Length: 224
Image (cartoon, rainbow, N blue to C red):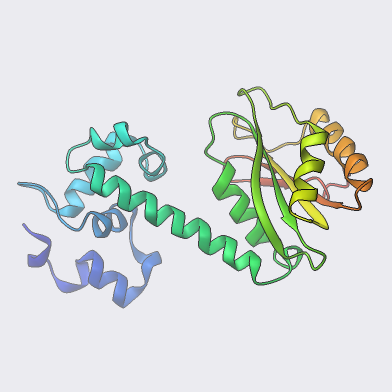
């Protein structure tokens, strides 16, 4: 049965408009994105098949172009559309930070940093550069390492701080294991960068460790 033949309050688009987006299941959200199904399957049926194929909505969203396009009902056009939607969501989070003091909205900072770093398969060290009013100047991924860690060079961090004329920075890196607990190495790196950046009058406000669905602030832990 086509979705157009379903009762109005069961159709994903109409349900979203009437009850709000949070009322929809993963399959219903994906069906709205897909717009149409394939022969013999509605968009919702196809969405369920795709979720089963990839294992979860998150795995589908993180699939490479090749992986994405091998699934029935998908292709380059939908992959490009999906990437555009994901990037718009990340930019929306960044604009939320740019409108005010990053420290006054820590959850927005966590959400943005998580959206940028959480799904990397290897460790990535990044900086969120801020001006004297703690407004965002630039997000930058500086170092990429193996799954065991990234080499962080103080000279390159200081160089970037001067390039953006930053007054402060929030450091961040991901733990590909998904466990956000800071290590002793994370503390040592933070202390080393604090000393290096003090020489150019740049304050290190925090160091956020990004895990799978969780973030830990070294500042809140009293570890810096």
